[in-house]
Length: 407
Image 1 (cartoon, rainbow, N blue to C red):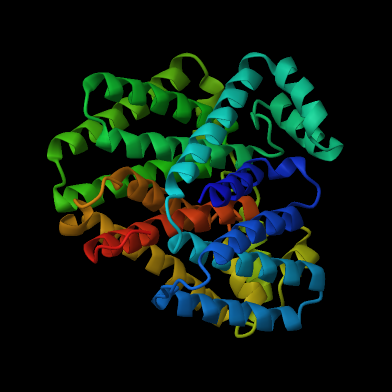
Image 2: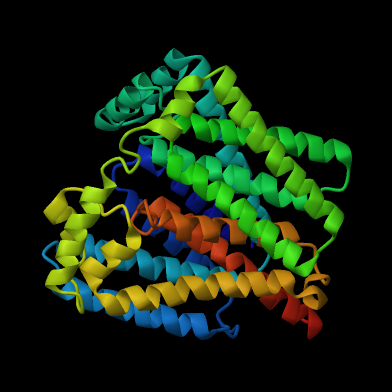
């Protein structure tokens, strides 16, 4: 599995730094293919485990394929279909592979920390990051980053504050999941400090949507843990840390950076133009609500993505694609939550934090889908799909251990 983990590390590094490259989709496909080929070459005779989600995947891919046939933007349509197919195959390989989660978590810790650091360096010493960005970013991307910096929005070493905010969110998800399994006060204090740093870095991006979604997701996870009453002392620690974080941020905004408070709470157009986009997308839906207008039709018509993956999917691929997609992502989340709450099985291995991390990323993806483009931003989609693989892999591993087998 060493070779597989190396290829997985390449996939993760590309997802975190894809904006540096020109041909994001095709380089990503090559890396994913290397993972799949490596898995296939070493597990040729191994039985592949399929579940109901695989059949839902098949239905979703079929509907997307049909919508590519009447798309006016064939390149964009087939690229989207290819990415979905590659991610499905990668997910299947991951679920049936062995010992890749440590590499996945290590990659997330390493790369999200780099983005956190870059955000603070850009805030404290803009010229330093500007020099780095000038070397690694395309000119158009560099100019976007620089213009956002001039308006007090810090994208770090990415091309957009939205991308940076998502990577920071991953850092927050990692800290939250580690907080739950932490055993000593010193570790909890250290993780609480990291959580504060993560949230303030998120504030510096000025992405209000992701800030709100992180807060909602933390509350969602707390409700899940309280529902099962899993080690109440640890849950109390999470609750206390959560409220201390929120209060500290508010005090900071009131006393040190009042501009952020005004922006987050009193900006006139809190939707930043999304309402007008949604109106136009709904007009497109009304023209062909059943089959949609074809993949890529939103950008072709509006010159911008829909900033709502559910409306965009409906407008481009029809109502059936939307329904199947909702069933698919809901199935992933429900399975993950059930596995977390299944105490009899969960005690057989020490991966609680990995499952919590997966649930966190899944819920963020679902919420962010209402205001962002996580289905069409392939770096977000890739991290999301790999994250959904975690609970399924752990379940397969647990079942194999029960039968006396090891994967």
